[in-house]
Image (cartoon, rainbow, N blue to C red):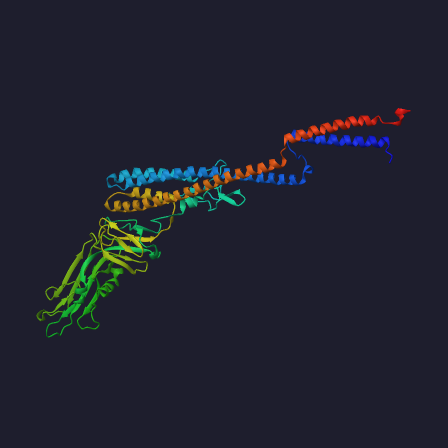
Length: 524
């Protein structure tokens, strides 16, 4: 095989160029510190590095989201602490207002501070973040969530949305709570039922906010607790009702029962129809005319008691009358209230003064009797899973409503508290003020508990964010380590390789120079 001089030179030149290319590649690796500067250096490794780089960018976004969520949660936490302080101050003021020695003037001063606290609360509810967005407006970040009405209440203009931020591939976290959850959706009363006094009550009875004695017995109905007075109409007296018609019995004896001047029952001695001889039957007769007399009868433990059908300062006047008698016959009637009526005593009037009540009855929304009892100050009144009590002295006809708890907002609670303090004064209104303050104190407790629950949620989300950030950071370090293993240069090996390539290139250059001199023309 013959090799020409030009072929030898071309092969030598190509060899030099390859060595120079290897040297340049080795020098590039040393200058960049990377063993892969183009995908061609290691296609499989380059793909792996690209995938790792993309994952690191995604994790960096997760970390940025997590930091944003954390900042917003911390802002909400700060605002909630301030809201708690407002509520606690309002509770202190309410307790001060419930003290009798404060008087109407002092309560007006307290009401003024309550309204200042209400304004402060509204400002907190309308807090904005660094971007100028309202943090308690749900998805409506550019809409002012709470605006004042002329009556002192506030309207919520946001929604119930919760913005979620992605902090990992499979985990999202809410960056704030809607204002409706914080300031509006708070149950009144004890969370199951609430109690309220009738504004027209004439006594000074103050009802306890109550508790649940058996949650399974709660039926969600609305009840009325009514106070009344005992009468002398008992099972024994009613059962003994009778006519004594003396000889020659040629007259008709008539018995009439009037309540507040209205005849509610009348019967004669003919026995057709026979007279009522049960206590409940007598109560039914009285109740048939309750719309006219304004008096309702109830049975408690074998005794009849009467109550005004609505709070009233009027007395209850009971009149038993006897007519149709003949003076010489000795006619008599033994009345339902134990009175003996004769021809010389044809009318007996009994007056139940509008004073401290002796009995109570609880009616459901259909006026069915749920329970009755003798009133004992602060004694338990229990029915259908509900337990409450009343202290002081409710008057005959005073009543209280017990109804299922409904949602109330913080602003309405403070506004009602201020109104109650502003209206307080005098014995009657003072009792109503105390009842209102008791309700508002319980509602403020509910508000505080709700804030604590929201704060617990915020704290839980902050812990979640911190845990996820730590996990993301650890994962990033692991990915960086893998990427470094794939693309970072081993300088010791690279320098050795560089020296080897340099030596080879120098040898190739020297040999190329020698080969260039091998020509027949050098020997002619």
